[in-house]
Length: 116
Image 1: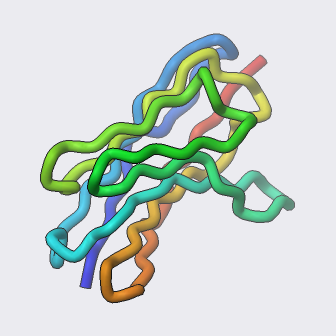
Image 2 (image 1 turned 90 degrees about the horizontal axis):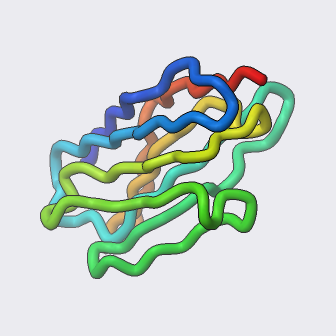
């Protein structure tokens, strides 16, 4: 079992920055990759960025060059540095962990609101 807790969301003006954190507990050794997803009101949840234990990263086209995902060496905490934020980045941001035993875990989400 893996538990995930997101933090760092808030209200920011367009052009500003925020750094989200995803803290994992439980069977951290079994985590293969961690991703960030977001869901705006009335929209489907969408992929934002992901990082593997080996450090390979992947980004949605909409955030490339603006967002950076990183992790500590143990995969205990994964970060999402968000810069040059736009109103369309407003959403609830969720952390997801995939394990070597093909399990999937979600956090409860953290709200990001970008004002124009």
